Length: 556
Image (cartoon, rainbow, N blue to C red; front, side, top):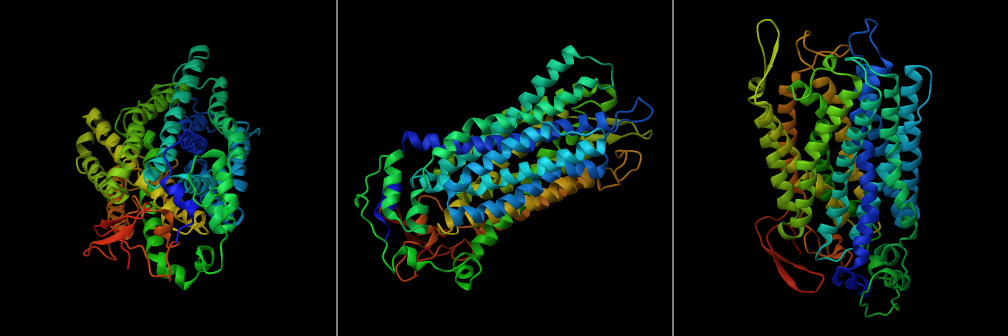
């Protein structure tokens, strides 16, 4: 039986504090996205500044291993942070560690901009050091923000609230592009230089862009410290339902029938679910779910991060960005940032907010399924006719055709990433698991995603290199080419489509019903499509009404 305070939270009307919590948690994701996706704007500039060619006419580039490290080290830190802070959030509480992640991001973003040293090796080493810890803080934000928002939300609009927090990532990507455009335009006006040279003042550009990530994080630090612990953690994990009522009444108008007098007795919800993460009981109850949430996020991030972090190289390959030798270092930053801004504005951001609008109407399962499907379609739409978009004549001269069509198809890929698995893989792990393991399991799922992102970040940069020595970038080994790399990403997206069938629908069902914390005698379970897709059943909603279920969630 559900505790009255939790039932009251499930039935609560949407209130001002719900939106306040979205902003507080969402600004963390705004910062996360800015920090992770501002680095592609400046990697070309770093190569020009610190790895200049001796002939003085060929733009410098980061060596292959250095480029991979600069882009991928933050993702490595993110993976570690997701596991560590997910576990810590369940151990100590969401509130106690929530501010720590933001503080790490502020310090590390400033440190990234102040990376010091007299040699290229010293500067890059310092930069990678701070970006690892930046990623560590970013990683903690994933399980904590998702768990906090899911535990504050009512059942009716829970999906939209969690999706809105994650949708701030789109604004972070957009803001990174806007900052890049603005800073580079100002420096280009005051410090012009002939192509392909870089003005010495350009060294300040990448430092300003990376340091700006500290600003939004710092602005919300105080408000995170003032957030009360979630009622679900206080009642179900700490075992203090009375304090849960007190905490919720300070920020929400909830109608709790218990008036703060609940006492959790032995045999109640706190005593029922004593199984640990590494137990047979957990595997029986949540094993397939965890396999589903980890595998889907893994497949998604291989495709999403490889394209988001290396989109500048894709646009250069199809001729939308001029060759480096034909523009100055500052102009290159401007053009890369402008491209990222346009794609974010017309594809990335709309995808996130379309999800917010429809997640509680269509459901998580269908949105994720159609998202992976269209990601596969648009990757194939780019890969199959790639030789039409980019071709070489007998002399080796490159010819570009239908640039606008390529960019439109590419933008649609990003739209369905975000109106699809990039949103749902974040939402579902925050709903399926018991309160005492919720942040940990979300962290594990997110870490699997970042493992995919690391493969995408380190692998795509090498794989997309041409198999012809005359066409690949200096210092890089031969790859399979961009066309076959796109085919590989289509295959990964297709795999994500089928992995989605391991994940149950969670729409309009209370967290305690989903996790089994409301059950009496351990009879209730949540099933994936594979578990039970032929027999309609019923589930208990927050209002206690039995509603038909069409194969995604079943009670037995």
